[in-house]
Length: 587
Image 1 (cartoon, helix red, strand yellow):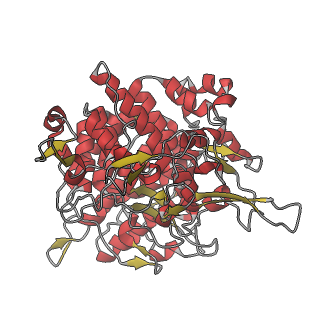
Image 2: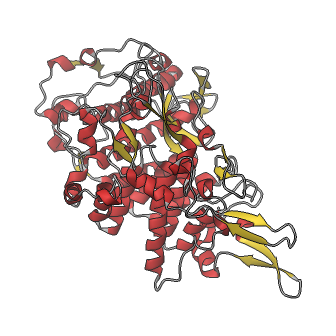
Image 3: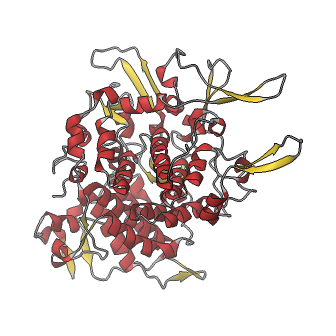
């Protein structure tokens, strides 16, 4: 039997959504082809098994092609609804509506059909891949099946975060009868997380497929979401914090591919007068090559002629195509948060050899006011006047280096994984270890200090208490051979100098463990802003923190303050104090 979508009249908008187009007969060429198949002409046959080795590439790239459709949207929905990006007068109406939480059903960024297109592809692949097929003693589809299951889980997670409760199905829908939404349960983020934790847990040791370098720039292994990282995220949303910490830890400490945070990619003052800066921070974002600290991307075409391209640069930066008129800039709240941080430099007295710390004077005048406090914003953001030839061109030029990448949209970066690992440790009741990720970087060199006592005898001092060591157990085991002071630093030091030497940057003596957890939770939320701004995760981070605290006003207060403390938006605060207004309309 053949089924033509043109001949189906679905019972509802949901029926049409669940019958959305998918194709499994695509190829690597879909990443650069200017032609696309009309979804209404695709036919399904009831005998379409995936049973040749070539199907492993063709069908998987077909799924990635559908993910390209939601790539920009993933970043935009995560940032323009948060507190770090502030719209300009040039913002298009559809994006204004997103930022103002006034999205209508016809907003082009509000199309759940596109997510279900990915899910339908994945469901079909999983249902039809020949799991018995072997080649040279290996199961042909094993690696690709693991990848497809992660795509499906990640896409369902995006759906739930953006729409709340959504129809959930795991079989391909090939008939009008099966498209009836009443046949399927509605799952929110916790139910979706629990389902896919169980499904993905057995796949943590399955290796990812590799098809080499695509388009001369991107290693295809970057196309895949690491299973352990996604499991960590799902466990965070499900409130299974110790499990989350374990998944992140095991990903970071894999003996075959250990991942220290590194001591590069920082912005720092280079002189005692705080006049000169050195920055390698923006080097994480290359024009074409995926940086070594980026672990999952959606590959994009470089031009419209070649296929689906990203428009994030035009939205966030001044370009030739937009006459310099960027639509979003760094918010007042973000600027205030960055300026409120303390930069610390360690100096050694040449005579006494004693070490001390110094910081810029509170009264220091900077050539650029974003040099104050944390330097990461300065490291990737520039705003300067420019010469124009027409009044239709913007007289100012904004560049956000995070959008330098022309041919991919990044989903995961190493500092983000470390921050979520710290979040999981904190929520598991181990705040001292979580804060060590921010302040020192977890490795033996950084946490075990050798000092001399009054008699000149050397002794080791552990910066973590015995109680923390006992409670954390293997969750903070990092090989002393792979993780050292030469490749490990606290995340906060990437923009604030030597955070490990800052006595003020510490957990205060608080009455209860819960108070310490809340203190570190607030610091983590701030650090996620300082490190991950404009990368698509901010609104979801605020959502997760709010849900965990059972306090919708936490998110509401942050977003209502996006224009700065003096411009608090009471209307926005009231609107977002009701959780139902966090989500897009699902119609």
